[in-house]
Length: 136
Image (cartoon, rainbow, N blue to C red; front, side):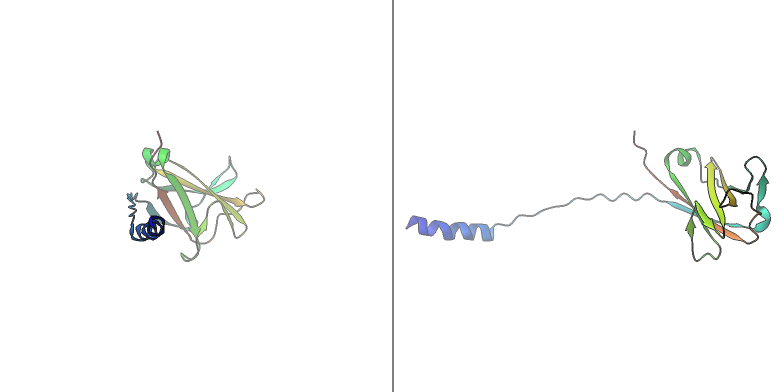
């Protein structure tokens, strides 16, 4: 008789036992920075050493900390609607970028490596500084 009561008691015990799971999440918001620039066709300069056209953009937000610890992404557009990440080939020309403290350089040359004339249209650039916590 005891064995007959044991099974229903176990079933009721399992049914009415409740466990609560508590998830503790800590949300850390690291603000990224987005800076937009307009590059007019007369801003391009020729570098005879590298055989490229380039534009030198002052970006004071790229300080020593950002240069050492953050990600620097650059996008370009002809219409401010469609953005393309650099490096990229746009209208047959290859765009790349370099940066250092306070400066961003966008370079352009033909996709085959030959010298290209400077773009004869306005280019919009978007610089995104992705903040990051350095791992020690």
